[in-house]
Length: 349
Image (cartoon, rainbow, N blue to C red; front, side):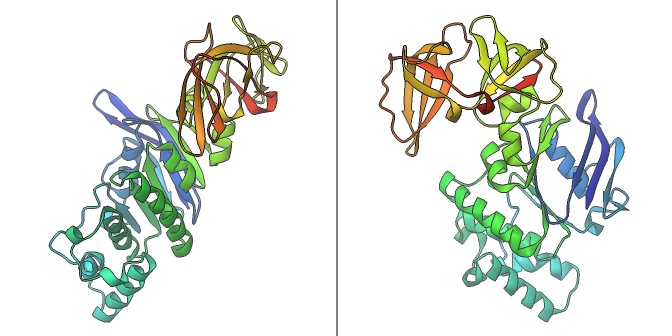
């Protein structure tokens, strides 16, 4: 549906986007993920029409999008700040875009009523934004964005202003709403959990480049670059060279892992193993593997995070176990994992 081909955007000496190409399908929930300053919001603004690229094309259903004025594009953009009119009621905020298009009054009333019911705000139509909670204001902004029935809805950090509990609720609400209305969503976020829980596919950005596009599970379990392995979720990374079913390291010997396809033996590589894939047992229980001392144990309700100091490794190794952990700081432990649970990728940090 949306094809972005070779988009480049420079601001003076800074290249915000460097030859970015993406394809986004009809009805897809697509996330642009990356740290601040990586170019994801610039791309969103180009799609919306607020920025003009220095090169490349953007087409929607095969038609050139860049040659159309922002108000002539079948696109809605939901801002990070929501940008609601404080002097208007909820219903008036939602109806504003339709009124500007001079739709019949009965049509406006019908569509506003339908969309307020969809977002669960039918009883709040007469309220002003100041009388609503953060989550309710976010729903009003969503309702205003979808009431015009755009082909594409762009969301710029839509949940960043909400507290953690409301954010979790609204993640579910966004996904439900997207499935219900059938609009293609493109969301910009720097929050990995948000992207993983919402999106059908994710594009990871770094310094204006797309490093990987994949479904959330594949992105998490099989990152293809050192940046993606380090940025998406918690990961323990070890440097070495590729061996047969293992990463060969100077300090720890062979560490079990599964190399990505096409990775030659003897090449410089990184092994990434997720905290929940590591087994932690008393010292002396496992022959070989990693050995260390527990630095800290943090309990997060459903899971405990254990930091282990492994001599020769730059960072503490993070281990995640279900529930409360019986291990105490200072305990000597062995660490191990299975080869299929760790991925070996090309390059080094």
